[in-house]
Length: 287
Image (tube, rainbow, N blue to C red; front, side, top):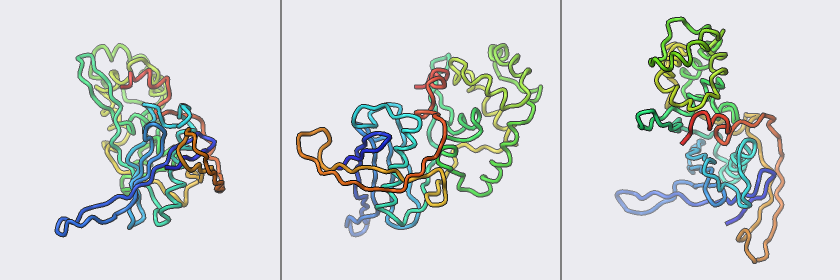
């Protein structure tokens, strides 16, 4: 099981064969490969079919730590680098793959005053407060459905509209908290910028955020949609330079090092999150 040393950290990489069983013959056959990157924990997981040109990003998780073999905390640019390392290896072992598909299934969990745990779509949260999703901003992801994609891009102009006076927060306490800020805000974008670091924000958003999304996006919901990342024609996806270290990392066996050079094109962007930055995690009371 090789490890890969990069400027972002040292990661364990595992590549396994993905198989399926024919229901009639009961013969097991190969259908693709499974690629994982991380440390003690798997933090990036890709399902790579042998046929077609689309692989699936089924997991990206850094919240629990353990993504890097020396104990380094992976966040911000290091998370982006870790994912691009996975993409770099993918392109080497499966040159047929041109795109990465991902599904909007991740929720921000929060506890309401009554003790119930509810979820807000991670992508919806990012769109409300940043006007684009994490994968959109960091990896150039776009909605697979062309009609939805065109509506999405056009409707984002709604963040620059003045919020209507008739909007309600569906709760008397929230009216007291939000109404003064709301009335002072020139645009929806301005309003969300003003409230994004409030404590326990998830609790405060849950009663009304979908109504806000409907107004901004003209009654079209962009939750639970499929997104895609272009691996070839995309300045936000880059090859990562790494040194492959064969053998058990941290053991007493002599290790053989093989230097592999790739063109390295840094995508210059500011740090955002682990998947969310610490201030926002604190505000959300993230579980």
